[in-house]
Image 1 (spheres, rainbow, N blue to C red):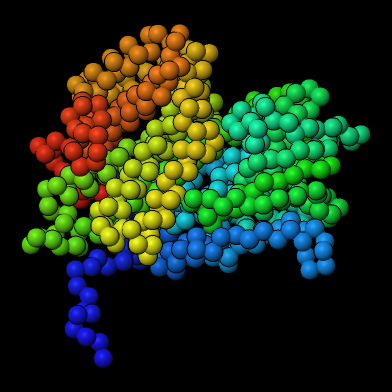
Image 2: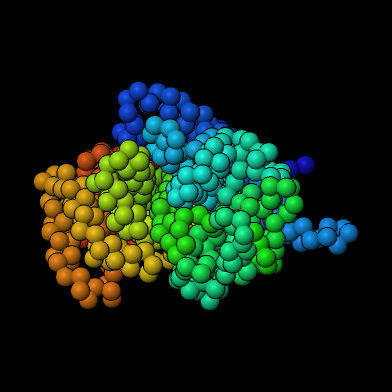
Length: 547
């Protein structure tokens, strides 16, 4: 017989059974803003379908199961034969299959493809971010393969397919494939030119034999990989298939899986090449240039993934505080909690608006817009630097909004907290991004013109933004000895761009709060220190996920 003390009261209901896309006003508005009119209805219907899938209880349970049951490496079969396979929980395969069918690898060949995919990526990250790694590496492989038209014609239709085929067999027999990346080596880290993996030319045109060890291999269960290795002509990009055309396994020795802080559902491996067959992609010695756009696409996914994690953290916090009562009223109506929630919501919306603007620039650049291409070269590393760094404090503060409940695994917030630092580390940590910003400014004058044109569209609308633009111009006037302040410069470039976008596109209460606290200095270092004179109730209501 249950005692009366076990009556459950004052607990928020689960945030489930809702359309994650429709409930995110910043995201829905961005999709409508950046898509041509004739694409909007179809895209909204498709994304709402994805959003309902992401908000379904079954999908959320799969995400928790995939995280709780990390992949397992099986190096040999029962007879002692080397197999080098990674085994995943069934929930992983269900989610990955749904991600592929939702178009997470299909951006390059359809109108508005990058905007539509970016929105879907933000949604799927909120289910289980580990699933998104192979979706990213597959999507990002396309521009590198286009350095070789023959390879692109052969592989791209399967890369952008909406069919998930998990079986290891020759790619020509598959309706869809996944790609991973093998770039980093233990002695070089982000300095990919320091790699020691060697590539020896074979008699077959474009074929090489690889020997070496990679310290981080993303998505080692994939059908093929982009690999950097040192050919006679210098660092070169290669395509390494898991299964050769005749059906035999390529030499792809998985040494171990990494035991990671977060992103646990996704396998990250150390792999060894020992006489591994590879096909050259692009010219010898041009490997870094060949993968440049692939790197940029992956970095943009770091921005979008961080935006998705922030959105889910904020949605959970606002949802909880909407139902939870304390001291005679709802938590969300208490002035101090409202301040915290509004501050978090502003950070989340700024990340979403910036990520989606860059996705729109990818679509425009693909159609030949050189100004948008120049904007991407500067804005992507700046955005990756700043947005990815803001993810962890947002996740931690959101967990605190739930109190002790937010520290319990069942709430889902600890998973978000563990995941939150990854995008800041992945594809070049903070210093790499900041230095890339400096190098780009020094080498390509067009990037600054494109950036200033973009933020200039908002000049005159907010005095704090105008002042920040003037201060940024002063910072940019002397780049000769700027390395020591490169992080600050990247931060200001991102903040000013976020402010300009919010002033142009967000409701006045959101733009006002952002400019006051992020550009005007009218706030503290912690969340929840916004000026109380702002319309914070409207900001929180805008961020509330309506289940």
